[in-house]
Length: 321
Image 1 (cartoon, rainbow, N blue to C red):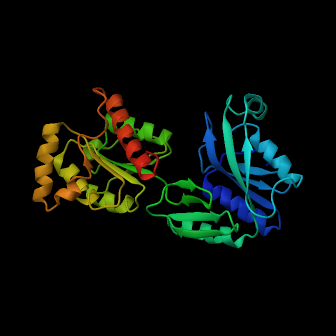
Image 2 (cartoon, helix red, strand yellow):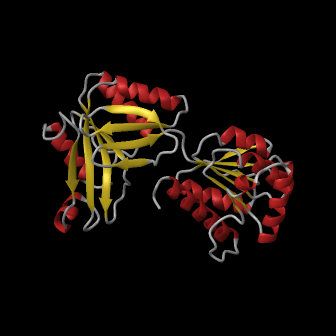
Image 3 (cartoon, rainbow, N blue to C red):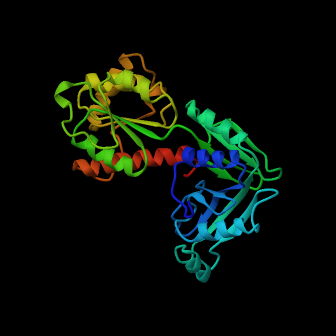
């Protein structure tokens, strides 16, 4: 593999582990900061083998080739992690394939052994949310619990990236709105589960890359939403289904919980959930009516509104707001 291929983090780490186990030199490149337009966000990874083979991506342009050549020739790597800047001016941006005027700050880190990568992969395979922290003063990489941390952070002391279970969206109730919301959420790399135990709502043409569940809604919340990287939205128009899901969702670690319906429907739901024993502080977590107020009427617009609300909550959790 001589050109960079976009790869999920576990796949990239597995490739780096195998290279290290075979005695190869390996560098891990991390996007630290971007200015202007940039195809890859902070936290994106690229792994480079000593012969210039690569997996992952940090720019989507020619930066990868430049990095590979410099690493192969010995200009990069060795010693402590080093910061490398690209695209400082318009001419450099064009030469490297960056959007015009864009800038990119990268951290180049030489991986010394396979064992730390094996330890990280073991924890990921066990379903843990893990924070990998690189101390810039010593170069030491350490593993920590990932809960309650932003996805990525970088300062003068350390660079920390959280890895683990994918962001996921559980939709209670199938139908046109659920399908629209599922399609949009897949574009943002959510794992989407549509749960509807009602026989009449079984979809004869299930969406590709979407999981379907016939569990009861409260069981589905327990099964799929055990991490803070979960969002739950009730869409069934059936209080029995929605209330089952919400009674469990509101005591779960999910970062977003929303319910479809009008303000009058939301008020009635609030009273029902209080009667079920939920507390006002728990009910305050519920976004109802779900989504940002954009005047939406059609199913696609409502889906857009809900996904915008989910995105705002996720960015706030990640420290992006």
